[in-house]
Amino acid sequence: MLTIELEGRKIKVPEGLTVIEALWDTGHDVKRGIGCLSGLCGACTVAYLEAGAQRVKFGLGCQTVVAEGMNVIMLPYFPSRMARYDMESMTSPLQELADHYPELATCNDCKACNICPEWIDVAGFVKTSREGGYESTAEKVMGCHMCGLCASRCPKSIAPQYVGLYIQRSCARQRPIPPNLAKRLEQMAVLAEDSEFAQVAALNQAELEVYCRKILDS
Ligand code: FES
Image (cartoon, rainbow, N blue to C red; front, side, top):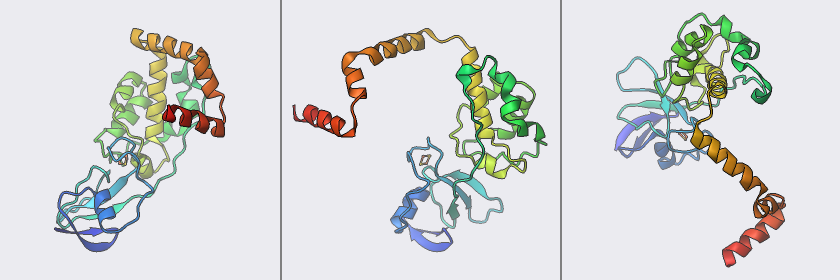
């Protein structure tokens, strides 16, 4: 057993648990902020101080394993602005980046955003995106889980996770579609016209339940 401070209470938990498992093991009925439990959705951010350490670290509660003397809390959801846009209707989305995220120009490179649990160099990609290095930015944000921790630290209210997403989408639109994806899209277009698929898609909730029950019973 390990002794840790969890959500402000000293508590004993079995060794080897993640923070979320430790919360559940000690009777905390935590549901909010937990999604995939696989380190993918970015919903479960935590802040923790290791025994004897001075610097607070950040991580994902489903991936961070508790250690003796750790002091850990789950972080609440942090609101940040995501621009509304219809990329399909834009001819050069990258040229419109400043219209959708004007606050990007106010970044003074303080690097407070460099607290990514996935070790992404957030300040680095914010800088390259301000300087027009869009492909390099798209590459750097590949592992982003959209947890929003970086946005919670920005004194200029920049939401790097959404800026990165915009740039990734814009760059993807400018690249030629890979042949295997083009083929899949064609197959999906045919699927939408498939008569049985179209019939199922048109069912309401009650009809869908009857339809599914019939399949299960057959
Ligand atoms: S629950 Fe999805 S990343 Fe932890």
